[in-house]
Length: 258
Figure 1: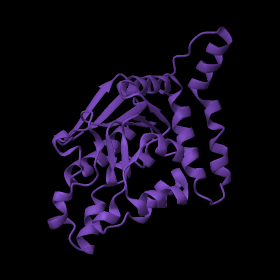
Figure 2 (figure 1 turned 90 degrees about the horizontal axis):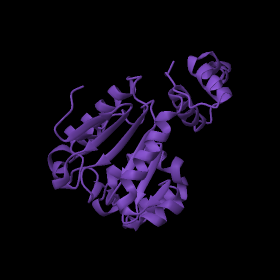
Figure 3 (figure 1 turned 180 degrees about the vertical axis):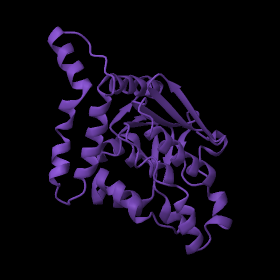
């Protein structure tokens, strides 16, 4: 896995932490970082040994403040450049098979906020602040970014963020459904990793299937017979046998991911 200096990938058994490491820029995403982030998530998605991923920003001041505006003059100054610029962000996070938790401290703004709808759980500190200031820059979110946001918080919530563009607090975004939990700032890491360990202890195949099924059900296209049948494949797995036998013996299961 080739990882740029602006990212840190750390592994603790089956739990991986991906950190955007640009604290001097409040973890703003330049093209190298955005492209690297997508590639990292593509690589992690292919790794069957991973059971949960935590995405965070370095330090306590920001999850991230979005795209690095310093690059806009040379890399995003017209429509053609903007199209190429957006392609650099890739779909690694959006297509990742494993559960992903966003650990949010401080500012979560613009393109960094645009990452969190692709995470499966979002845990924020009480002092975290959120905004989509696109209207202040005269730019727009793309269709796929708006779609991901609207699926999470509905069209009204998406438009509240997009049209007003003002900084709002963690309690408000909890009401909107943008985050799952708000905890005291000094508890964010502990709660995040407790949640990650809880997920990692469960059957990883079940987690991947559930994530796949939920994402598929956001598409109104009717399910095929093959898609419906996929829900029964779990009964052919070693993990199902392990779980069933552990339950009968009143023991804690140790799943194999097979």
